[in-house]
Length: 136
Image (tube, rainbow, N blue to C red; front, side):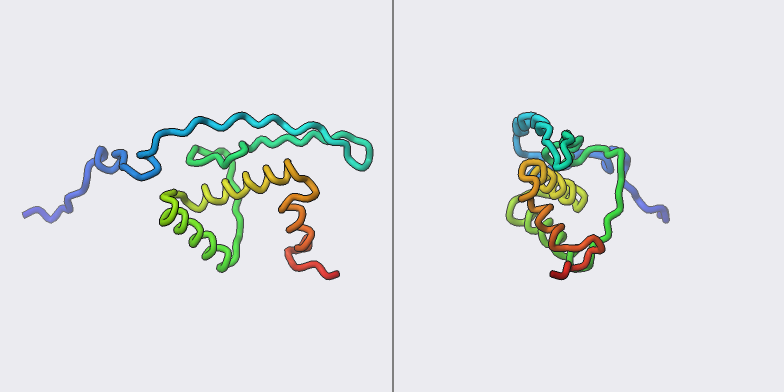
């Protein structure tokens, strides 16, 4: 009797598996978003607002840039709960990176569309530059 473990072959390790997301027919690609018109700033200059990011998160593709983001334990638990809820109630299997990319895309689209009244501007006004609550 051989003492070697029986391991699966490469074809078994790299086979395609089925998931609810893969079983659905592909959706039509979203219509391209036109860049925002140049807006005059308070000092008379014209600012061109363009985003190199897509209006949606980039999904599961090879990415050429990486950042590290530190989150609190509570934020990480909330993110995991959202990820599990997406899986359990909406049959959407996503990893944390995809969740973050989608959240960033939504936030930037809102900022481009609403500017001063965007969620980003409103939240950053409440939180000071050091990350703490502003006084006043």
